[in-house]
Image 1: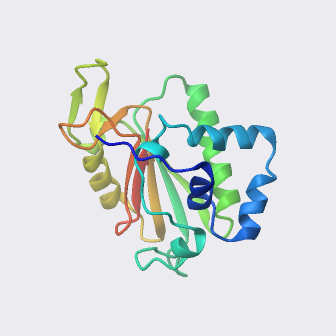
Image 2: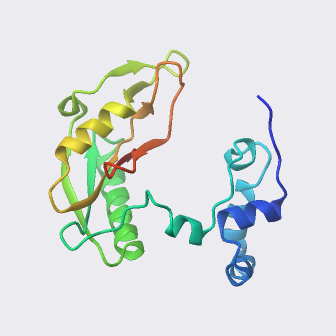
Image 3: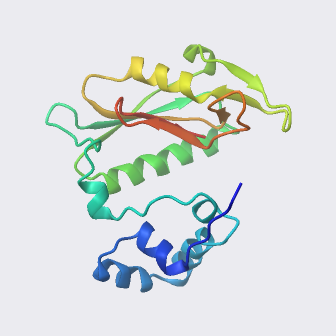
Length: 187
């Protein structure tokens, strides 16, 4: 695999915007945020080792496949899947995620669906031969979420602490989404 490297400035523009006002705002962030963004620009990280065509906010906003909420589809649903490490961690995590969604998507309602065990999803699973961790098939989870998606949902997001894999040949994936179905999951 060939690794293509871009300059930090090119990456900043790709991540933030080509708009000079927005770029200057990025440059004014505090030291902690700056460190977090700079870590994304290190050669061993995803952004630099998997180059894609730059996309600024204006391009994202006008993309033909970008869905927007409608009057009858204005809710984000969060679906917990499987057990978490501890009940305290899961409750705190879900509380944080719900608060973030309410703040970021301030015109949409955020609703929690009743947590479900992995067995309810009827998804394929495996034990990763390298890590010995249980993994569930990401595509099957997307199908489950699509079937369970409420009528008023703009989208439904599945949350799990179990590793995901998208294909048999892949080791793992952090998440997967379907833009057309309005579903996604993260681990």
